[in-house]
Amino acid sequence: MMETEFIDAPVFIHALGQPEEWPSQPASGSKAPSSLSTAEKALRAEYAIHRLFESGHPVCVAYSAGKDSSVMLSLVLNAARSFKASGGEPPLILVTYANTGIENPAFQIVARAEIARIEEFSRAHGLPVRVDVAGPTLNDSWAVRIISGRAIPTFANSPTRDCSIVWKKIPQERQRKLALKDLAAAGEPVVLVGTRFDESGGRAARMAERGESDLEIWLEEVRDKDGKALRIERRLSPIAHWSQEDVWVYLREIMDGERESYTDAKDVWEAYQDGGNSACAVVADDAMKAGAKACGARFGCALCTAVGRDKSLEAMLEADPKYAYLRGLNRLQRFLVETQNDWERRNWLGRTIDKDGFIAIEPDTYSPEMTRELLRYALTVDLDERLAAASLGIPPRFELISQRQLIAIDAIWSCQGYHERPFEAVKIWLEVHRDGMRAYPPPIDPSGFKEKKPARRYLHVGNWEDREDGGSDSFTGLRDLVGELAGVPEQGGCIGTRTLSDGRVVMDMSRSDMFDVDEEGAAMFFAFEAERVIEVYHGAKHPSPTEAYRYYVRLGTISTSTRHLHEIDSMMRRTSWKLRHGVYSMSKQDLIALSVSQSERAAGRRAPGATLSEMHQATQTHPFHARARMR
Image 1 (cartoon, helix red, strand yellow):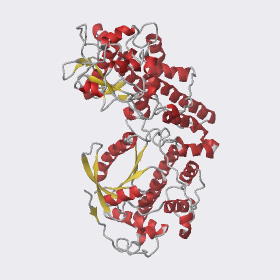
Image 2 (cartoon, helix red, strand yellow):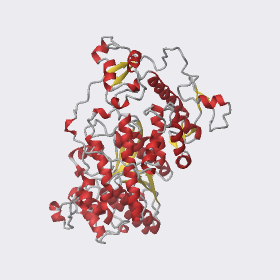
Image 3 (cartoon, one colour):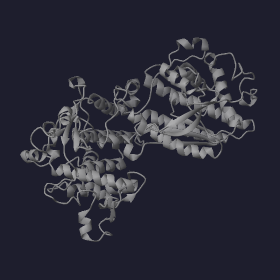
């Protein structure tokens, strides 16, 4: 339920530095807000923001460096400057910015420069402004989330926009929750949002339903992804009645020096011009605005697959040779989009056992081979950028996979037993960065793929704990047998054991709120350990693929919460079960042959013929030898 809190409409305050007379009474005038001129709309917005300051409301501005948020922030900072010039003391102004980690690099450069201008303008005018930058956790970053095999990208026909939730909404929510606590110490905070009625019919309907207003504080009930109510936020929509033409006219006035602002707006203008493949022709004459062609580009993640073709990035490549460094990113993005329905590149083996002892057999996340392929492509893009930047004498303009992310990927691959030997991701990193073994995504014709996902089947596995030989699973999970037998926990990097609530004994780990990789530890690993572990673990012997995870634990390079230890132990025991039963050696066809359909399962059938162990014996192969057939 949304309510509206009305701001009193007093006599206009001349200290705003705007025309002496308000065009109509702001709260109750007869002139429709949408019919006002751009100058009048700007005056109206600054008036509303000025009243927030006068009432002692600290404000939180959701900033993206895009055209709308640039205009809104300019209005806020101009109002704050005028309020201070009139003798007032503006309350804290918090500017929040979400960086997904894979933003369009060209626009990310713009955003960083604009944030520097915000801070410089605030210092110059003595304004209490704080800029907070939020980003996804290591585990949720694009590289770790996708290349580890945990999830697939969000595509155009995906039922939800998980990527936006994980990379923007959750980090911003986490950031805003903490920020609003800080702001609350100075008064009731108000969140300023840059939504506009004219963006689309759907947007206008949702704004109307929420009761959004440019002059009145409206209340929004904030809920989490599961629908649980978190809090009630006070909000204001200063540019709700602005058209796209108003936005570009305002920015054009800043560029021409007709309006003071924290920015000269040139970088933002140029980015939209190149990304929209248009001249951004905007005229200042309000009577001619209807015929003006403004830039319509939308900037987001460089590897966004939810948009299909990334028209903005492709337009930038066509617009100017200076954007040539983005070509590798565009090529990788196109590969991801074109292979969406290539079910052979997916992992068909489910991870979760249901109450009846079945796991799903269907194309799910990327297969081990696909994750290996993507890692090599992404590292190649990084290497090409590093070399290109070095030739220009500048730092790399982007990095898809940091050393922390690489170790996180390697640890997850190890925990899941994705590859034959441990440290597979480290091996690929060395091959690309040390040996120059680059690889580029091939052109793909998606027309031959079937869009409809194959029907789910079910493989009966019983219980992950089952052992036909009656042996013990004590050392198949998160346990370091070698370290414990040595009897000297203080040596060899071993950090002791811990007993879980279910009585299982596991390796103890460094503590953190969530799964994390120590940045300094990652750098030291690549400097002193990487080449050695490949020599040891990629030699003649075939150690368990889960050994890499234990190795990182012993070094203290990775950390997690106490609650997560049980989940890790369960995943590693599940991996051991699959290796022991030869499931990893089975092709997609083998798995389908061993599984039953939904109707067969409902009829009480568990298997169509041979048992899982019988099929394993029939293959007579090393668990990983047939992996290439299992994609």
